[in-house]
Image (cartoon, rainbow, N blue to C red; front, side):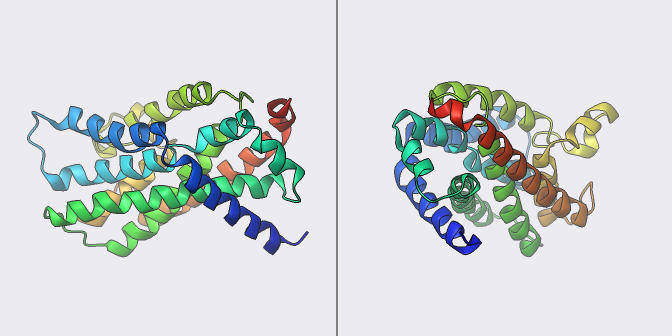
Length: 249
C-alpha cells in the first residue's frame, strides 16, 4: 500500500483522537492546569519579571500539552476494544502511531499559542518570532513522539498505569531542562545532565527569542530537537510492533 494512502489514514486517526480523547480529565489537569500551578509555585514570592518567566512558561506549555494524552491513547483504545479494529484494517502500525503523534502535535501546538499571545499582551517582546515558531513546531512534534514512546511499555490496557509511569519520566525532565534555572546557571554536572533532555533545547530557543542570547547555538537547538523527534518516533514504532500482540491479548 502506498505511503500516501497510509498517511491519509494517519490523518483520519489523528482527527478521531482529537475528537474523542482531548476533552478527557487527564488532558485538562496534566496538560493545562498542572504546568500553570507548578510555574506559580516556583515564582510566587520571587522578584521575577514576565520576561524571565517566558522561556519556562513556553517550555512547560509545549511540553505538557504535547504529552498530555499521548501515553494513554493506546491503552484507552485497547480497553475499549477499538485497537483491535484498527489493527484489522489495512493500516500499518507506524501509520496508527503517526496518527496519534499528529493528534498530540496539533493539540500541543494549538494550546501553546495561548500563553504566547497572553505573554505578548503582557509586554513580552519576542524579537525572534520565526525562531520561536520553528522551535515550537519541532518541539511539539518531538514531545508528541516522546509521548507515544512512553506508552510502549508496559503493554497494558490501564491508562492510569501508563500515565503514572510516563509522569516518572516527564516530571524529572522539567527540573533538569533550564525551566526554573537557566542552563548557564547550573553547575557542570547538572549542565551535563540537562543536555540529555530535549526540553532543554526548546527552552534555550525560547530564551533566545526574547533576549537574543542562548547557551547553545540556535542551529544546535533546532538540529537536536529534530534528531530527538526522529529517534523517538523510530524507537516507538519498533517497540509498539513488538509489544502490540501482548496489548491485544
